[in-house]
Length: 427
Image (cartoon, rainbow, N blue to C red):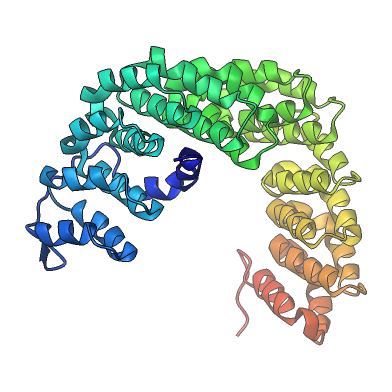
């Protein structure tokens, strides 16, 4: 069926969520929804597509005797029925492995694809299918089917030697981004065992497809501490996107990436503003208090590129008390920033600093009279976030109660300041 393997791979994200990975679900309830197995098998052979799909789902609740009609349904004329049949076979688990292994040799590429995917969902319980998977992989010519076979083979815990090169080549493929994404997703499922694929995965951080990039980052993060050294080296990659995401991933790894701090400090001087900001954010997450990190974020707040300003504001928002050196700049940007989302993060950063942002209170009081209601609302929110140290703002906030556009923010700020620790609530 021309083009079918690619179409099937697109829908596998949904299929995976339905299947029970590596589980042998041989419950055989005798009946499902008041109907026995023979009823559902008959419905699976009917003309109504919706009913065939329902039957394929129902048969996943029975024992291995439901496998033959489900395997036959892998060749159904409707894609939804085919995918549901594969999901149900995966739910049955070990009892379906032998039949799925035989289906790997089917003349129809999509049937082979679905059988391989179901075996991948069954996982280690499909170990008996490893020889068949190896044979099928050697003979398979369809790239998308090869990736599913390699995924299933690695998932059994046997066959990394044959499966890993296929997944690595898939990530590096210059063709269909769905193929690269499914390859990276398969590697992500392997966790630390995907370490041999790190060079290809790090190169793929430059991939223009957002879907591929998400799966690649997940796979690298899943490798864990052993990814730190390659990611540190990638901070000098010629591609700025690779450097940026390498820095971000090091931040995601947290304390495990402590040995990368010197390389990240060096990246604070990168020619690309986004790399500088992301490296600074990573440092604040790995080793708070390192010189230069907050300064780089402060500089990023006034960058001409919206995404750089956004990233810097987000980083300062989650830096907590580390961002107290940025108070004056945060206030100035709060006045000048035209992007509402960035302004919320700026306000959030000041709230996160808390009472250490008390020096900003006079400026925030002035901002309650700003022409832009959004700026006024942000000022009120930050005053509330500062808490007891913003008591001097209470008269101005009381006056601002008359401002209908920011009434809810003002009321919340007054309540937070009055109820700050150590204060007695007013009746």
